[in-house]
Image (cartoon, rainbow, N blue to C red; front, side):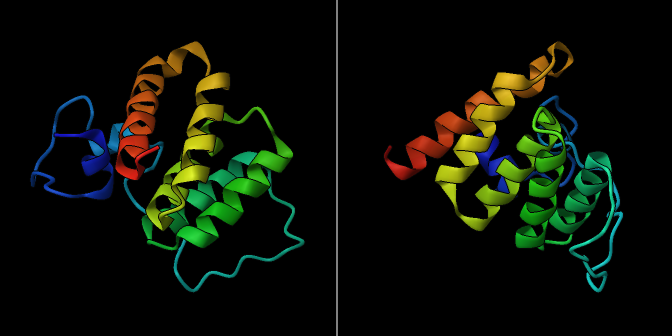
Length: 136
């Protein structure tokens, strides 16, 4: 099964225990850490990690625009935050903005630390599949 299909839940088996499961594609916790009615304040004084965590929560809830906003704030605070680029790329892909998703996955690949080697492989495959899907 293609990684893209796993990412977007198409033809996903009920129980997926292999190495490329959804949990290994993105850096998301099991349970959302934020709720749909939580408000994102402009002046909030959060760290890059806290913005990333909030973005993950929004993505888990299907609130992809809010997720993008949070990951963007994390990146503004820490431009070398590989995790934020990967997660924002995922949110962009779910919104259908393939160009921005590919850009973020490429940034992630360029700055990912060595311990993210498996994620880098997956991101490269996602880029290939996203490009094939758009004819680019």
